[in-house]
Image (cartoon, rainbow, N blue to C red; front, top):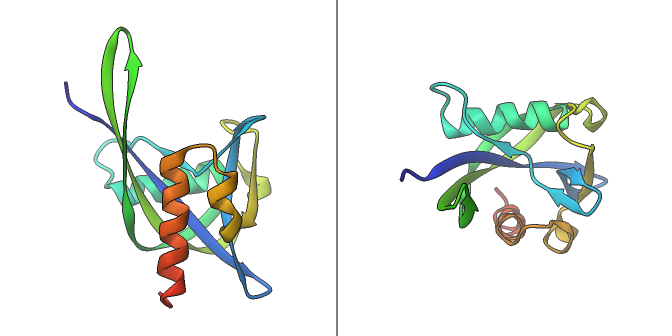
Length: 138
């Protein structure tokens, strides 16, 4: 069976000289990064940009690919390989108050706290990767 594919973004914005990242609340106990499946012939980066706009209300500019998260899950009695490509984005405009109905809320959190706040280990790894990239002045 073919792997399932999604794309997501780590959107960074500076507030008072500190990097913050846009996160979404999927359930009361789940903070995550915006992500979703590509529509039609969208590239992974285009899909990530669209998902960011829909789920957080933000417009963001891509910087670079951060990496892929791979994991297995069960659906309809079969094991599915899921691959999510994550990209680093810089905030350009918009407000997290303008998120869509798919998420409970969208918010800014300090990027250095994201590895402890995000619910999924692969997304925590992407926050660490973003910290590393930004630490090198990119």
